[in-house]
Image (cartoon, rainbow, N blue to C red; front, side, top):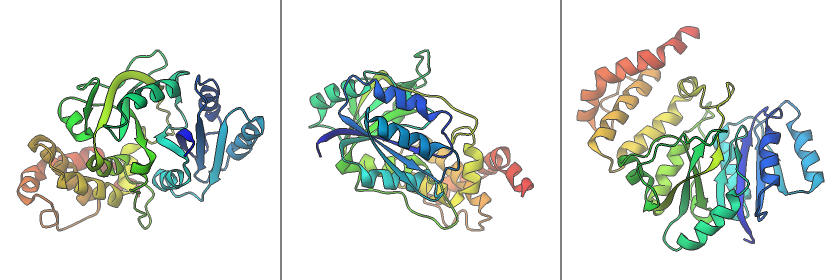
Length: 292
């Protein structure tokens, strides 16, 4: 692989905002990257827009179109097509600062023998961090980092040969599996280097995944159940085991399961979490059932 890093962007009808990311890539101080765009069935002007950018030839762009299959399957395709040594996802409504690629290279050259990837903060347009940090300038797994205080969104960069070992499952009649499902699997590969530096600027639009997460989970319960079940199988703390047992109960209620306890990874924890899981279900998901 001769390219340093692949930036991957899944997009759906984001022609009105995608140019912000394009411009941020064009002004990178280090141009040794490729931008892979996977269009998840857009019906707007995205394809024409990207074709114009390809003709401009300011940066390396690879565009792929797929029938609407969801972000998870777009990610699988992006990883398959990547030629960079490193791989990072940048959402279509976000952008990166001009020194991002340069800073990633500098850090990677220092720590690449010891880690499988890098973790950076995400921030707002005013450079205010939206990542709450426990670890700073440490080498940890994601699980270790969350257990000592990391919270909020982060920019994740993985060695492509590591992330290529795993993929999101394709589930019948569903289009979403949480990204953390993949990151939990990658955690078994090794540690990440954590930096509090802000390289990634984040915007949460009304039509984005983050704003509609509860509805997304309700419409794709099997994908979320797969993530929660896998998370519970990890050697997580009692606190996180109980929290995820609550989520497990809520998702099984969405699925109308009558085997909530029997199917669980930790039956006793699930039994204790059951009333809290019911509350969590009625607070977050029951309203969507009424709309059907």
